[in-house]
Length: 296
Image 1 (cartoon, helix red, strand yellow):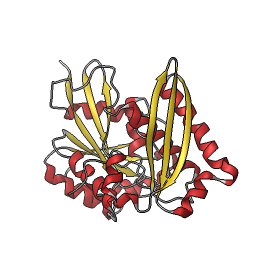
Image 2 (spheres, helix red, strand yellow):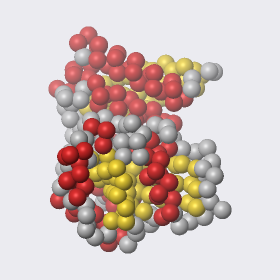
Image 3 (cartoon, rainbow, N blue to C red):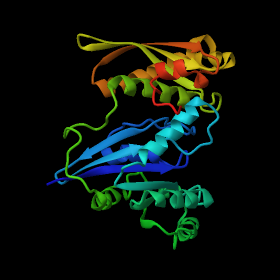
């Protein structure tokens, strides 16, 4: 009988949660960029093998909310740690361990579930600097185990995944054996486009990027996709467009290539850019973009 259960991934922005999730399920289900708040809501990654089904819940990085979207993201974190079998606190080993991480561990002790710590990015961390940081975790109450991993290099990930199985408490299969996420193809496409915008405009555009899928239609062996990139300031639109449209064309090429891999089909992608002032505080816009579980 398979053991099943839910494991929440929590931690600071850019700690490596999404990269670790993708490594766990061996496919890309959560987008990645150097920009904080890339992940905006719970994203489930599902791994099923001969003796278990592990449902990993990726969450936004911890933040101080400044708008309705921030409220939604904080609510996503709170919801993610409810009724799970284990909380996996992900800490950037290269950046160092400080009181924020220690405080988070103390906070999650109240959930009365096992807490495992994954210290990430060991591939770029010098051992002589990493070891003193790991020493800060010694004696911290509530930690069941600590693992050092490099999700990017896939070092230590399998050992961590196997260790997490001991915390699974269920026997019910929640997903089909070939499922890897709970998200729709439409959601995945919008996230791929948003990722490519964030990567292309990393130092020029802040967090206020949204993507709306206007049309996603399969025509024979190809997909016809029309999407709008939403920015919240008029000054951001020419940055995303680029001179003579070069930036949005480049974004479209990279997005199309990734979407074709996702859908295993040819894709015709059309991108538009629109300004929606302060859209992150607009309930109607948040609803249109799928952020429907907002804090009231």
